[in-house]
Amino acid sequence: MQGVPPENPKIDTSVPHNARIWNYWLGGKDHHPVDREMGERIRSFSPRSRTTPLPTAASWNVR
Image (cartoon, rainbow, N blue to C red):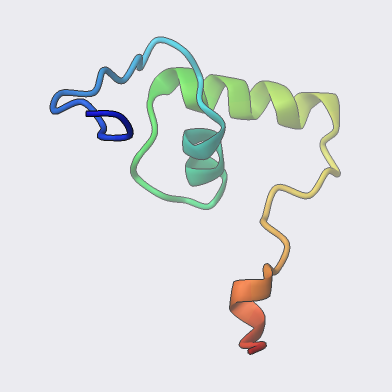
């Protein structure tokens, strides 16, 4: 059936993923060493860069 996710999706934890890097920056627990390493590499390029998310429309309670 088209559009249905596979029952056993494969997650490659040997490759950094942007969502897990954000999770690391935000102090979460759902990341892997490769994500932490990439997060620190990104910070090293621009130590003053913002590593916290900006507000989204969902957080503004605008209807």
